Length: 168
Image (cartoon, rainbow, N blue to C red; front, side):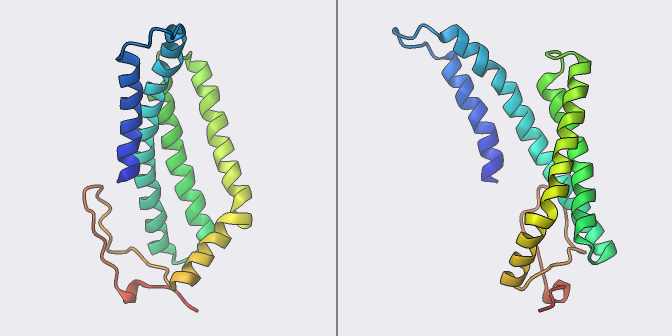
C-alpha cells in the first residue's frame, strides 16, 4: 500500500516544486520545468501500470499454480508475458501518447517488452528460481491460492495448512 501511495505522492511533490516561485538566484527554472514537468506524466503512467500489471501478474501466476500444481517457470513466464504486454502498452499510451509519434511508441513498446522478457528468461535459472526456492524452504511454505479473492479492495488473505504444498 505504501508503494502505491508513494507512486502518487512523488509526482505531487514535483508538481508542487514546479508551481512554487523559484529562489531569486535560480536562473534555470525554465529548463527545470521542461525536465521535471514531463516527468510527472511518466510517473503517473508508472504508478497506474504498476498497480494494474502487478494485480494481473499475481492473478495469472496463482491461477496457473492452482491448475498445474507446479511448473514454476511456466507460471513465471506466462504471468510475466501477459502482465508485461499490458504494462508496457498501457505505460506507453499514458506516458507518450500525443508526445511521441506512434512509430516511436511502437519501437519503444517492442524493445521494452522483449528486453524484460529476455531478462527474466536469462535470470530465472541464475537468480529467480533460487531465491523462490530459498524462501519456500525458509518459510516452509508454498501456498496454493485456490480460495483467494483477488479483489484489489480486500486486504486480508486466509491461508490454511491444507493449502500448503511445501514438501521438505
